[in-house]
Amino acid sequence: MQQKVFKITLLTICLTLSLNLKSETETTNSLPQQAETSSYDPLIPQMFAVDSKTQTIAVINKNENKVEILKRTKNEYQKDTVIPADKVEGRHDVFAIYRLQSVAIYESHIVYLASNRDSSFVSILDMNGNEKHRYRFNGAANAFSFDSQTKMLYIAGDNASGYNVFAIDATEGFDHINIASSPAFSYVKPRKADEIGKHDPWGTGLAMIAMVTVFMALLIICLVLIGFSSSLIKISNRRKGVQPVETKTAIAHTKVQRDSSGEEFAAIATALYLYNEELHDEENTILTINKVAKVYSPWSSKLYNMNVYKR
Image: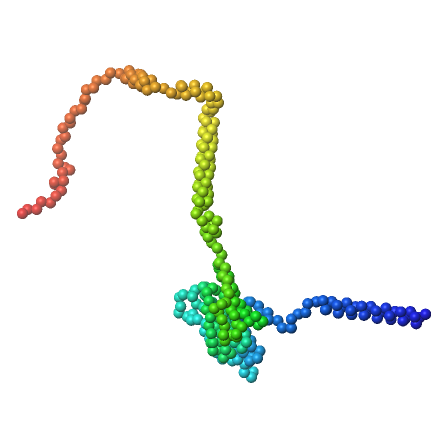
């Protein structure tokens, strides 16, 4: 009995192991196989590039705006070649200076990118630093990437108003790059005036909105002023103790009382004048001004204070 139980357990263990191996092989076969060679090159700026065959290093020196090529000797690296991208010292047009952005080594060629505010260029060098070609294009760029399968050099960059994307054909090698048929795309953020011009080319809608806004503002100001003046009148009447007139008949009665003709005003004025005249007594209008003779006194005469010079 013990032998039979032992054999049964061995058979179950073998069956479970075979089933697990089969499931693992099926899962591995169902997974997508990765490509043996990957040509992924990130489209980001690179300050350093290394060639594994010749042990050459290309470096961007941003302080001096130069590309420096370092070559390995027995125990150290030495600076072999220096390539300036653009002259910086003594220049006032800072916006037009081409600044180094990225460097890489592709197919035994050193490639570097330089750009300013409005344009860029790609320079292709051999491993000794001799310039083979230089390609200029409009738009600012700061990074490039090379796809070894499609043989395309992709260049991209962003600026304050948008971004730029370029693709350069390098199927015939970096010695014979074709930039004439290279596709490009530039995005510029549209201005508010351009967006309004698309929807309202004649400007009628904008003019109507402006006029309605102005008239609505004037109407609101008038209503505020009317309400403010009425509230001030009510406050002043309360302080004086004047009761507000509510009915229309009372308003008409007071209006009739207030409206008086000019003859009534003239009669009232003459009565007041005669009354004031009767209050005064009759006075004698004789002038009592007497002329007083002035006695001459020479003590204050200025004549005696002057020096007399005899001729």
